[in-house]
Image (tube, one colour):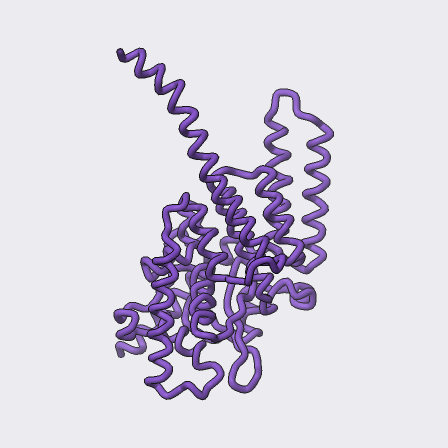
Length: 335
């Protein structure tokens, strides 16, 4: 009987695992198709939806879209009421103020629990869900990916405008202020930094600014393309790189050709494919050369755009400086 059970497991459980993986991968394919249809104009641009289907694919379809929408709608209604209560309906940036206040201040509508920065595994190297908006909504703790995403989702829910903006290893928000000028919103420490501060802290080159790879407010289509980067990254985290991964990246680059994270993902594909071939007992030298040459071409493109790699140690120092600054502020308030 024991031998029969083992035999059944060998014959039956393996295919079941394969079937489960196939269904899981299908969710990624469906998410990619929906995002692509948004970019092609076959579906309305819906950033909230694009974020959700990416995270739901990673979670193997266990999230509930109705619950996700309902929570955002409820929060949106509370924000609209807050604007009316504060008599701010006449201001163009009332929505931006309301979302920022909701995320950074202690209010009855957020149960006196503002969003905080999650310093534990903030790059999602061990737990990829650290990058997710749904994780932020559940725990009120996020990072420089989920915080600006959530800000944008809430702004769009109440009719306000917010633009995702890239910096090296970082995302923040830009929106038009009451005087018609761009203002920066940094949600990691709840501030409004000037461009000069961002340039200095993030070591952004003049060429990168001229080529608009950083500090440029993203269009709606570019924001959707960025969720495709998230989709590819999530897929890589769970299944590794393959032709589907490259297809997602290449499609996103059509709509956001200067996106450094996407270009890095493409270089990553060539590098990992080359390493995989190298490990074979008799590697194909033609494939190795092709992967190496393609990788170098992408790196050259990235360098020509003015990108300078920000060492992870420097970014970690910057993140810690955010925490130190918050502690100083809290100490001053207590005194």
